[in-house]
Length: 88
Ligand SMILES: [Zn+2]
Image (tube, rainbow, N blue to C red; front, side, top):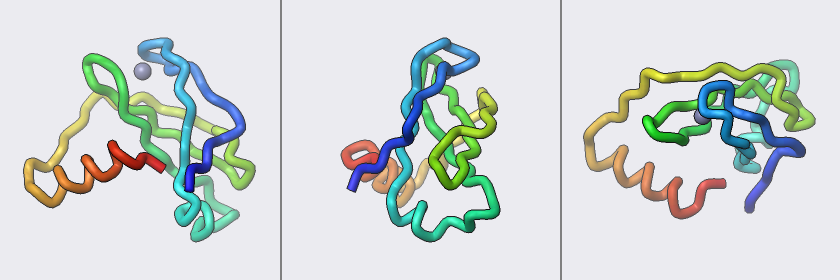
């Protein structure tokens, strides 16, 4: 089931508006004392936002990741395609 945060953010690098979605089972297993790290990939060239999210799904802190590496094996590719088709 899709679960989207209450607010979106503007990416500091490309200025696109990004809405963060976190899977329910991740939220359910989250330790409420620790901010949840969440990565959102987008843009051209590809970059990522590293977002720290609190229990209310608010984005507490955000960092831009320009250096991205994806393992070139079939298992990783399959998992990425699975995320692509059903992201939350
Ligand atoms: Zn961006």
